[in-house]
Image (cartoon, rainbow, N blue to C red; front, side, top):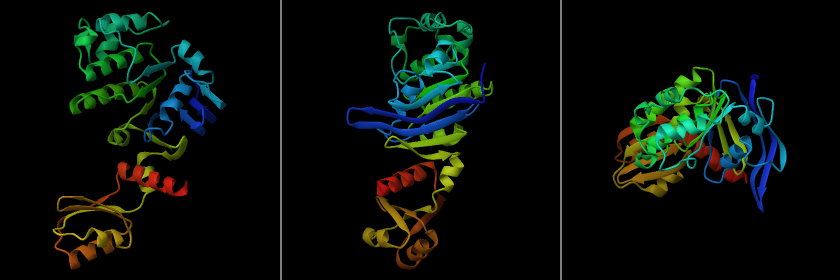
Length: 299
């Protein structure tokens, strides 16, 4: 039986020695949401997921999954997990391995159905050691969904997949969310968070520093990026222009992140040999970098 709240973390803190990995996180995920957990290495994402899965106990605060403990939710088959590594017996065949996992649950879906949903129905008789990294990730996905969970937790799910495989994986994931499943995924591919998440949660230094839709996160960062070919550009002068936050160069191509793109454009057109000029709004990567820079300033 599910509730309106799938996941609830309140005041969760975890230390490892002198390192404060998670610093008072409050997070609530509603049933049916697809939530992307973002942040640089060391932000606290993995520790937060480990506490959510009952693998690590918080030093302070509470963690609930569907109103109970994480351990109880997993024991009841309410949670499916796809980790980036581990859980693979290299000499086992794909079908054998997924069947082994199915045997651990009270009401698993048929193994053939799980393999088909993961897009690996034709690999049942292949040994794990003969699969590519992307194919192994799909096996992990099959193992995650076989208990027919209400919540699926994914850690870097498309690592090792090429562009086409990543697209196919998210098509499979869409089919699962269409069945009403709740999804929490951690990723370094920001375009995946932008395209597939209902909500983005950004962590930094063990804290949640932004939480909203991708559109809301991007809207919180004003400004635009100007890309132009500027032969002989004076980078110091460009960096000193009012409203210019950051300057990057790639040969004669200059990228300027600007709070006020209009004034910067006027300068480029009136004082340089700039051409092939493009102006774009901030994307999710720009927003994440800007929020991170703001947090470093406040620290």
